[in-house]
Length: 197
Image (tube, rainbow, N blue to C red):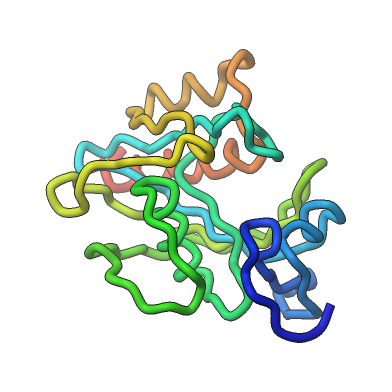
């Protein structure tokens, strides 16, 4: 697909297709990316609070991919013309505060500071192929305001201590999207380092 296209909703958002070295080799709509499992960029944001609890969301049942599954933090596909960090901020705003943005438009970031944590090589599962940059974001309700997630995207968002997250990740009765287990272990290591454990 070549040329410019207006955004007609999430399935029509344009995404850059990348190779194993994260070089752009083309672009496609989000719907095409999902249907063909094309490799694209995505931002993952480990969300934690001032008490060092880690944010875990339960995805809405109606989500087409991994509906009803748990995810650690926030994830957002990188749209055409966006950086990983911009996608991460957009994901936090959409999934935690129900604020929707158009890629490339200016906005007030609500005093958000995403801290780069790691780049993950291309992660592939039965539904997705993504190259991730992982960030960390410390949520403070006084600074950022109360959470308000869109029910069609996120069923619930809770904060778990490191031991509680370990239990969730090891519980076979709790379905996590596959990459969330990797992100969960990364989040535990990050916060244990900050707690001096």
